[in-house]
Length: 146
Image 1 (cartoon, rainbow, N blue to C red):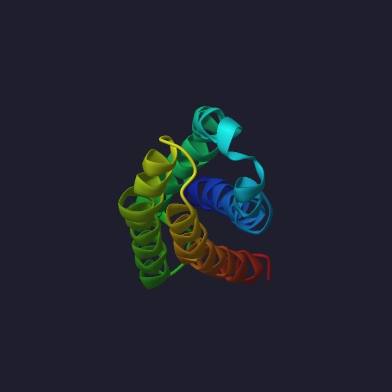
Image 2 (tube, helix red, strand yellow):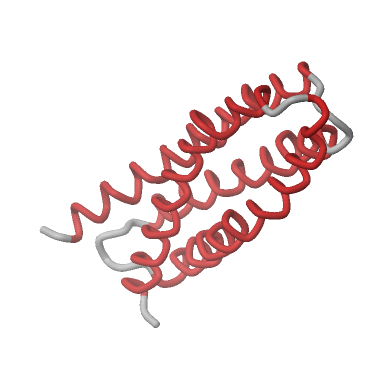
């Protein structure tokens, strides 16, 4: 595999996550408070079980190819952009581990309005960061096509 392949896989993984995070932010999380108290624990457990492979695998591909871009980027992708992209991923992962996962773990005990609101509001961090990564990657994809 070469730098162009790493770039394309990273671009695809990033834009997959951009679409997914916007759907989760605007649609999925905003309906958590409509599930009902009696069903919420099972709903949250099912959410965690079902979303993990849908999110985890692309996040790992995105991270791995971002690291590989540091050492093997195509000529049209400057090293500083690879570093910025990797920093954005680090911030996304930190937000996930420090903010969203603890909220989901608390919600496994049942619906709690303040935890739910914290989850929805803190998830904007990931939404903005992934969108920023998507724009960065799309910009350099357009440059590479010239």
